[in-house]
Length: 593
Image 1 (cartoon, rainbow, N blue to C red):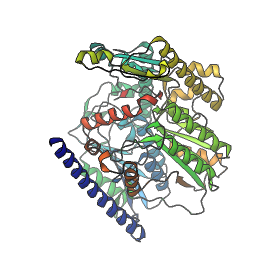
Image 2: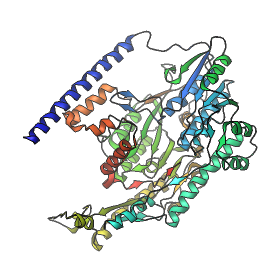
Image 3: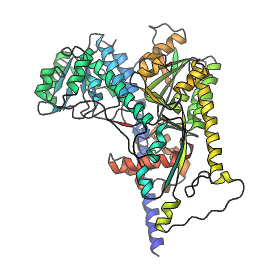
Image 4: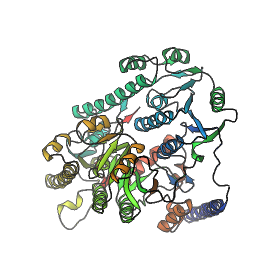
């Protein structure tokens, strides 16, 4: 009876939730359609406009569409809009609310480049920070080139450098008699180390330290370039290493220009724009384009790379996946479109499935064969499987702080036979066929024969990966094998070893696409997304079609909208479980703070 009542309650709750969500989406879609027919749906740009960016809000690399609509402006959109605003006489300047705690180095760097380009048109940039409280200097790098940085006088400047944290579970598994066994090609492909080791191996330590040192060198060089009182990168490092500072001391050192509250900074920006100065959120600033302008396709992908159409993604959260079917189809459609002159692939991924990566690699090559130039624009990271799909492009563009490379393969499993014995849990198995049927079993460890077969399979993947890189980059295979030991590189390091062609962000990629397509550099182009962003209604329909009932959406999915440690841990574990068996090309990325 109790089970029946619980089931009945769950069904009723699911039905109520379904009904609420159904009407929310339906009315939202109707409202959006009505707005699209309205002449007032496009925001008018004031004659003395100050664009406003709030970096305290999340800034994903690309637009994320959830069941509740877009989650906010993306980095790619900000870059494009600042570029358009350079030649818009109505836009006088830019006001930024700084992130006080931390950002991805590459996100910060691309934003900095866009700010500097914006200034070349004679437009001002004013920033207000309620402290640079985090120890990472990335959020400071994002705004260091501003004309004026205001700092609230009761806050601190704590940016001291980069710290990489890696959690190791080897000791935990040993205590519980769990056996973690991972195969890696080769020693720098250290993702499996978190399960097998209790501390850094020497290659893992070397690679991680080299990575954060390169990031630190870059941010120090930019600080010296951007701040008048700081002459050299060495001086910038000396200042960072003396943190934290009071607001007054940060002013003396030239890290900021004024002390004051948010209101004072806003008023200063408004005054500088002119008598009728008015703020406009950058999300509301629309980019005009000519209907006859040449078309450049943009195929975006962010998150782990998986096979299929991405049905495992959570429609309630900002978690995203690169689905091989979806991206391959987008590339095929862009290649078949006679109006498309070139294709930009924006990659923001730590890697994932070898099978899915190869499927996308094939679509890239088919698009090239159709005569479409392929330009890769790397975001925060394009590593392992993310680099696999980039390897065959005509040109690869990355930022000095982009994390890339990790050309290698890793895979394995955790056998819990000993753990089960400790708690009295018993797993009995029956199988027919070969010994390999138990290769992914979470109960038994590998025997010698099964492990050898698994190693052979992994080596085949490694050979394919390195051959793709050698052919795509026109590098001798022997040279590729020297750098293809699983090591992650910054974009600056990747340039030195031939893995990328040019430094830059999305704006540089657009220029490269124009050149490859023989479009004049000054010609305005239209960027068209493949596939286009889905509407909330389409997201809802896809969810409904896939599940046929709201019972497939758990309260944990809904709770993931909350920015809590518990919700985020749940999402990480959920993703890892969904992707584990096919996660062969994943970069060993540390938590950089």
